[in-house]
Amino acid sequence: MTFTKEGIVFDKPAYVLAPLAGFTDLPFRSVVKKFGADLTVSEMISSNALAHGSEKTLHMLKKSPLEVPYSVQISANDPDMARRAVEILNEKEGIDIIDLNCGCPVPKVFGHGSGSALLDDLPRLKAILRSINETSNKSMNSAKIRLGVNEKNHVNIAKNIEETGVDFIAVHGRTRAGKYKAPVDYEAIKEVKEAVSIPVIANGDIDSYEKAKWVLEYTGADGVMIGRGAVGAPWIFHQLKTGKAEIDMSLRHDIILEHFDKIVEFYGERGVAIFRKHTHTYSKGYRGASTLRDEVNRINDIKEYRDVIDDFFKNGEMA
Picture 1 (cartoon, rainbow, N blue to C red):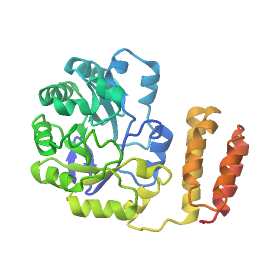
Picture 2 (picture 1 turned 135 degrees about the vertical axis):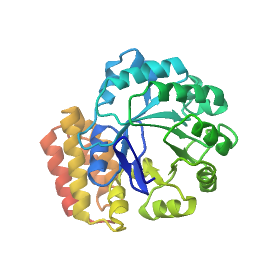
Picture 3 (picture 1 turned 90 degrees about the horizontal axis):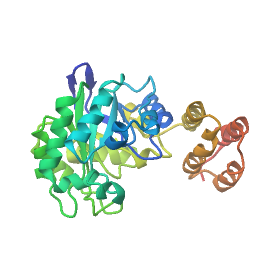
Picture 4 (picture 1 turned 90 degrees about the vertical axis):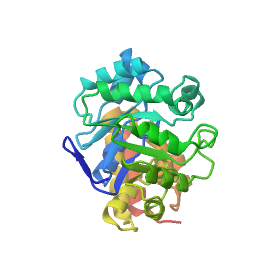
């Protein structure tokens, strides 16, 4: 994915944090960006909510100063609504890329005609992408897809998307019916890469340094997009960027504390409750993890919580 457009440069391979509702908020994105991610993407944002000026939605657009470049992912089921959303994004500084979600399998999104529902209506999908491209004042536009709805149609989908003028495409190697449990079809991602001339980012079940390297080699993709594989292990981007599979325990400790501090900085006292789910994932594989989880579930004070996890991860050992 080595190319330059309006000041944005991606070296191949590119390491991208996937949008993941409830996890890839500003604090988490700032941490993975600091420790190796090339590109961060906002949580999926509804075009309808943007167009109607939802304060909660506008708050989700906030980014860390570290997030350069920064992509905002939107969902849309209509070209006009997409245009209205992009017009609002055009007024926001610090956004470099607008990405259209064409892959979300969640029933609420699918039933609304957004996300992966677009894969069954390619004329509408293309009209939405063209509306984004014609309206956007950002450096790049992209799309994230699945292989199809019930049946695979990935090459045809990708070729149609390429025709709209997007700069790159991310491919999740499952159909909508496959949700998050079916085996990822990396062969299909490889077929998309071979069928289009724009950069292709591989996505789906990339949960380790070794798996990421294998996916890049097998598919020939220009980068990997990692979502759930980074939850509880955001240092995967550091591993990929440095080419070192091993992660020092002291670095894990530093990243975890950095994440906690960023969460508290962004959410205030509410950050303690929010960080509990992260503590549970970070502590997997450590001795005494269950005891730690029980302890932090009863802590609400910021300093007390920080002291507990500081001590645990500084002195912790893997089981």
